[in-house]
Amino acid sequence: MSETENQRARIKGVFSSEKIAKVGAGATVRKTTQTMYWFAEEDETGLIWIQPLNPNYVPSGPKQEIPKEDFLTQYAPEPEFYSSKVYPNIRKLNQTIAKAERHRTNGETYSAEMEYGSALRVDEENIRANFGLGLTYLERGETDKADNIFQRLIKMEATFDAEHKHLFNDFGISLRKNEMYEQATEYYAKALELSPADENLHYNMARACFAKADIEKTFEHLREALRLNKDLEIAQKFLAYLKKNNLLPHNLSGADQTASD
Image 1 (cartoon, rainbow, N blue to C red):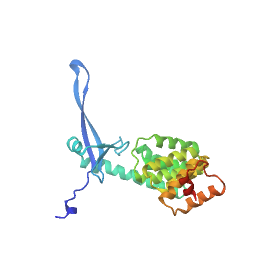
Image 2 (cartoon, one colour):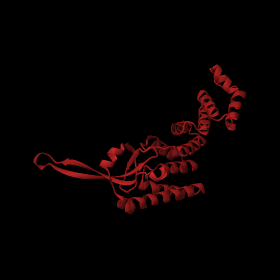
Image 3 (cartoon, rainbow, N blue to C red):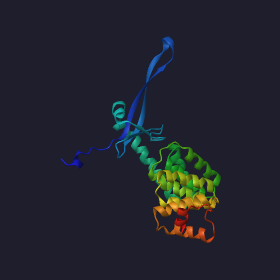
């Protein structure tokens, strides 16, 4: 049998766990069993990540890693619960978000806001829906509402994945265009945590830093963008502009000066 045939399917689905709690005191104390439901998924490295289901039967909130040995002994599979309750609701939620994104792409911002709102009533911590609603507000120039979404996302305890970097990047671009430079740099910083070797993120961060008149950080991120991709033309032009207008930091080391040449 080949190695591929030996490979088993990764763990993915809904599982339950039980917790025994004591209720009452003294002679009236009794034990109750609480059942919790989780969405579990095994990543490519074999780690198990679990996420609680919210009252609407969709995975919501922060993910947590659990040792596989503990998972296999403490969590029971619930395939029928997944197929009858969870999968249909996840599918419907994703369809709602996709519909909202189509409205936003077409410039139908009020219809987009309504659909994103529907999604967030099902899962208030949904990352795509929160980002989409924030972008919708920015596109309408409603910066106060967008800033509320920004604060919610920054404080959210959700586990952001590398796939979310484009959402942080898109939001950062929109924040910068709306002259919300401080928020833009925070978003780019979050995106760079997820993908530190992305030269375009460093270039975008440089633009936001320049808008804040932070020349040292501007140069730092431009230099990093060009270290990652020496042929990045927009970064080359930005650096040339800084040199032409004598805007490079005055405290450059010899190596930094060489990098700017």
